[in-house]
Image (cartoon, rainbow, N blue to C red):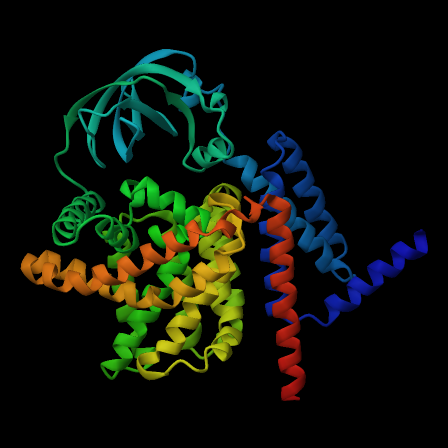
Length: 505
């Protein structure tokens, strides 16, 4: 056993000796992310993490000249990730945290951060909570009657009994709420409106989005209007439950919400637009950054759009400086920075996971998928847009199936019939939104061909969902299904890249 251990350490050391600085940096970041993921499953006192961290630091200093020095550094990064996650957990014994008031009847002033309406009631995220003149850390989830309605940015006064979110018996929902620092909720909140003056820029963008949604609703009939609003402006909550069920059954839920793959398509469309105007890729970089920033503001800065925008920008930056081969390092660096800021997003934020995998698909899958779409014209870079769309969807499909739906054997057929038209749908949807804002009659006229495209999507979905075999499948996959599917996907990419490298040599 001793010899076996020594041999293993020796092999690791030999690998470390040959590692380039970029590889060392990559594995340090990867170790940190793995440590953060591991830390989300157990809670230790910070004193233990501090002692372990000091021990590893002293160990690294003592063995600086040894072959296994970098192994200690990787373990140190892993330990740091575990500790970072534990540092953001609330201390409910401290009255600075909102969860301190759980199981108490209290009154407080807050600002509406998010609002959702369904099933005859509304759900609000109460942020900037002030209790007895003292600002508390964390947010609260409020359940209230449907009226009066409250919107993002409204100042409200709340009277209710706070309850620990651990009492919510919905799978995965507690972790989702924790990502927003929500550890307390009110089942029946009494809410009164205070003011909505002095709107912040983000609140003004939210109001603009709501106005645009109303204009689109006037230009297009339902359910086409809801589909376009969900794809372009976000907020697919009001999408028909009938079509929600059909799309979920066929694994098409991703088309009615802004996700990482959507942002990838937006970036690709903007790149084609600027290249068509005569700009080179490097010169088009900063205008695209500005427009993507404005777009994410317009859709309300949803986490998925913001993170996928950041990651997509890093890929574009790698193209700009001619280091696309290092795009994977840019991607994991962006992920590590965002996780360091908020460690909860790694395991609890679906948007972050989808954004990360969408951009991973753009980097590693797109070159191979593009070869399969060689029959598509390269005019207007249509081939590149379609391959990017399909790559992003393939990379996010296991997560989509895990979180949002079952695995139907017709899912692949449905995606193949619909996804190639997704870029066209997004371009036409963006034009429709702009026309609706500028001149409603023009939007109504342009809405007819857009309605036909939506009609095609709905009819394809209805036809496939109506087939007897539409219910044949594996059901909603579990975490092991995700591991197996991604294992097969990663292995496939590894073999394809290796085979391509061998052919080149």
